[in-house]
Length: 436
Image (cartoon, rainbow, N blue to C red; front, side, top):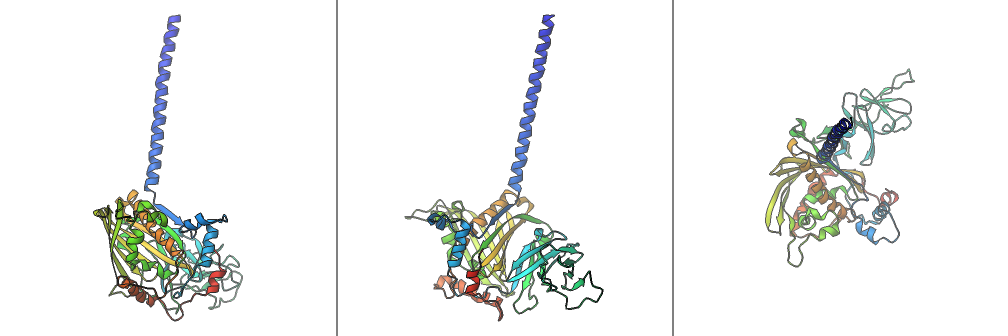
């Protein structure tokens, strides 16, 4: 009997160990699957890099500050003290991005402040986007706060007046039996939804759009898809940001050091040549800027970029065409050995000296994932070096230029077409009285 009991126990132990090993194997396999799925998610999830006004360009001030101020306090202090310079009008004429398409769902309303105006941006039940003046003409309620969409109208949250998106006309007053006055309307702004953005047309003389934002066939046909974005607030005049395309000399100086040094200016300085020794990695640029002869609102920068080893051996090259359309939109086309992709840059003044800059990448499906992430990240690092300079520089109305800077003068003459007689001017009191 004892013999049989021992035999049964041995069999049970064998079964237990087999069962235990199967459980361990199952747990290991499950953990590996979870880790793989998580890694793929973060690897292929589009990069979304957002930097507020205080996030870029204040590292030196933070190191030297003896009063324990926060980044936001330092940014506000530097903004108040910054010498503005003799700047051009602050809101040029053209198309400006108010938001991205995926920010606005059907039957949704958003409040957007830009260009010295207050907008109510909404999408109808059928998906059409509209832009209206924000304040109800009845008693001044904000149509972008607490309102709702009814068909192709937005309904005021205060008394229920409804305004049609297409022309701003009031179509319903729920408590009146009389005729609705034709004067009961708000301004409806010309708007277009193109390439993942909702644009508004701004013109100081109230002129109708003189050109349109082109639709990119690869995006319209969904051959290219969204690959990532970055977003910034910049303390500068709008003209200075796209002016970079004509400023050839700054590229090797500011953007020559490798991406690996990051965006902080002091760190990037370590990537420059020193005592005749070339850094291991350097970026080199050749640039040509010129206005378009066929479309006067367009200017084109043609760039050839090389990543070099020890300043000599080129092992990665990229050709970029940066097409500026009006004052607030640049389309960068990257031609690489891996394929072609597009990066849109929109610049929208949300205050006279604060710009909201958005970058949005579109690429073929095979480039989405790590490759697209690298493009967005690399462009962001380079752009943040510029932001660090813009946040603290003054605008030079009559800069001291040399012959090699001639493209800057050409750019500034070209940009003048976007100002008109009534384009709003900057006032010092407006800057010092506002805080962020």
